[in-house]
Image 1: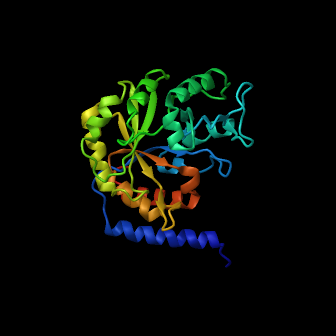
Image 2: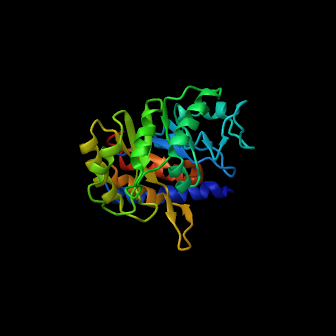
Image 3: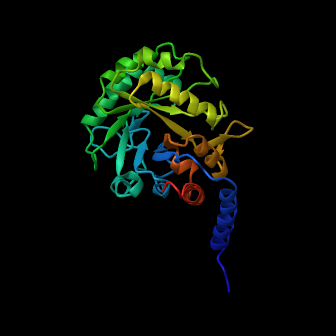
Length: 288
């Protein structure tokens, strides 16, 4: 009998994972993988099977970036290749959508123009006919404790529609008074994506969940969720997709936490999702 290569690989993966789960019996509830990010560019499209992980929320990081829109509109110039947004909204992993607003690919430029990007975001929302209704919004200017004008971000967030999200990170493994820094500028009605720093090699997943718990303790109302960085840095300072085994180690550390993946189209292909999803079902079958 002739077997396809994909079937052979699939069986091989199942055997490996089954063996792993026999060794480790998870005692805590699994991480809740709620959403997946996509950083729009001309070399990728939002296509995948992330719903197998539990994903129901999609976050395109930018609605407009560098002055061009990822949506068709009459008053804002668009990028030459646009996603099929109607098709995207029909996907199981996109039942809910957090719409990215206006940003820049260059972080230094984005921070210098943060107030202008707030105005640009409002114009983008006003002048675009969307094929869907957004459930919330994400302002894609990222903050860390080195940004001396971070309070300008806080004031800009107050002008934007709600529910609203923003993301933070730190280049220190265990930054001191990180929660107090966040509380000093974050508006009350804004939620936070905390980048775990595992993909960039800044910290371990265990350190990341410790920080996230402290942030939620200080900010309150479970307003902080973890972004699982599904990539790793290479020796030449480029990024590669994290292996399924690396992602599994992060998910083990995030048991009981709400998690969003950065980013799906670039770093979690279908085979990676199949592998992690199978591990989820076997490792946490007592909770499912």
